Image (cartoon, rainbow, N blue to C red; front, side, top):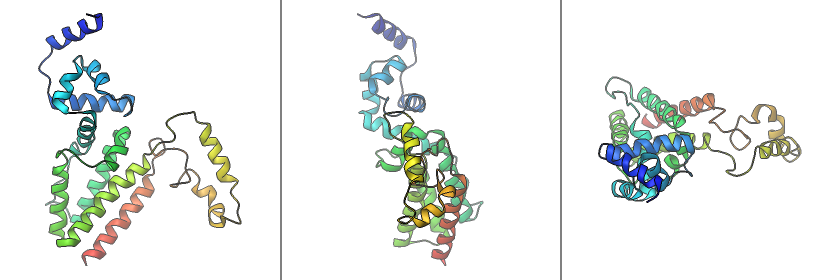
Length: 236
């Protein structure tokens, strides 16, 4: 038996019984530190001093583990009481809280915004949002449309904000992209070139820094304001 296996068995024997919650918590920290691509059942097992089979028993496969970890991000959001605030103020507060939570765990943003949920740990958020929208007067098909608009806006917007550049390579692509952008033909792109100094690296599709390093706070607040105003008009 290898020395590593001996140490791992000794560590496992000395620790408390493994739990699903512990696996999710350690996996979340692992992804925060090493990135989502580095997360494997074997790597996490080594980190925790257990055999990979123990993780499979608690979590299923890696896809289920990633889903549980991403759901943990939303599960940890502290939701304000829906009865102490106006419905629109509540939605604004929760939207900002969701963005803050995703910004604390940016490596999981692509999963949170693009993967179908396979666990029910996000149901408290779903329940509270639906309850607030119902009490605001949204019912039937309109309730579905408004709910999807709210959740889609928050998760989709922040996922795009926190998107990263190419996984491989160095930062030369940023310099090359900026150079290409600034050499754009003003005849073909007159509006873009007129506003390029304002837009460059500050707007979607014409930026080279991720929102992880260059937050788009004012843009998010503007988008949220437009969303809330639109929901008020829809309600009326």
